[in-house]
Length: 155
Length: 398
Image (cartoon, chains in turn purple, yellow):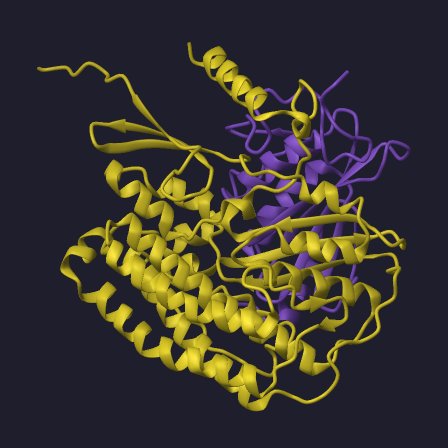
């Protein structure tokens, strides 16, 4: 197991050496945020983290930046030991799509399915894309954790 | 040459009512004879809309909301949330308050592990062990009630500190409970590692290797029973765990028996830690002043719940309400990993293997405010509800 500083240094180095532009920040002493330029960078970057034994995916957080901004942000939190490395990916609200991590990290399945049904992100390559939490008769294109969702039911 | 016709798969639906334990979840198990060939899980039957609801409530109200995510590990949710909000607000919590949080968290772990011991024994058909362990669990429940005033949602946390203190009376009550529980736990350890009938249900059953556990993202005692050194209290000490270090309990066997041994050994570690805290509780204030609004920012809070790592992500937009509250509970990952494990086992072992991770469905199911398509549920009479149920049932399964 890496120490805190070692884990963060490896991830920082990985981000700096990355072919495409990344932006890193240290919001808290134990955290490193890496903003990826494109959702296409996600899978190769996660492979990089896994190779460096930093690949324990603790959670995926979805954020809706609101209809005005028209963007969603996905936060992939990796927690090797005490460090928290967060990969941040921005997607358009309309037609949001990102590749699945399940081929590299099988445990991503539950988080990705939750992301798909709560935020309306299409996860490319997910083997079981059906509902995990929401009812089977949940209306289409209704994503409850988006900011403009209020309730479903009476028309 | 004899060719064998491909067999039709036979599916056994288990749940959503009482799939091994008294909580809702649905498992579709495909079997070939008695052997499980596939398993699919469906959750959400206890989804209550908590992540969404949190966005409409202020910081203080949310403390009480998150405490109700889980009825077994209520304190740890409130603790993870408080630690995160205090960090965002830049509030320094007095050491005595942080230590009392750890004390309640460890007492909660004791009651949770004893609860699990009973449930798991019940699944194995060993109801005597179930009754005894739940009877013994009452001593810790009484101690918690005497200490915090509540049996289940202890409500020990406040933003900025805690609301209950340890006096001579509480100290005596807790120590008395531990003195009773310690020899009992030795007895249970003896039972689950030596009872021949019981070992047939646990030894070598549901084996998860270390690499499987790492790949599937197992956490908590489930991971530690497979030799994965993953315990937030040790890896990234929070609250007062920095001053009260504990040793990580590991087992390399990865089977059901190992999951019993790890949890029971953790109980001894809890007893030791609780006694140490009661002897060396730092003096001082119980609460720091907390602002009503929390500055803009994002923070992550990781704590070790009885079932494993509990993860909170909180984003504040500078108002008195959070912009986003994300909760990742331990059971989600443990359940997903264990569902893959049942393949190849006897169908009769499935309940035991499921119970082996100590699943908590209320933890799993959180996020949505569900209103049925035909009016508000709160307005329905019992008769209407019953009719709706019958219609749904007949509509789907003629």
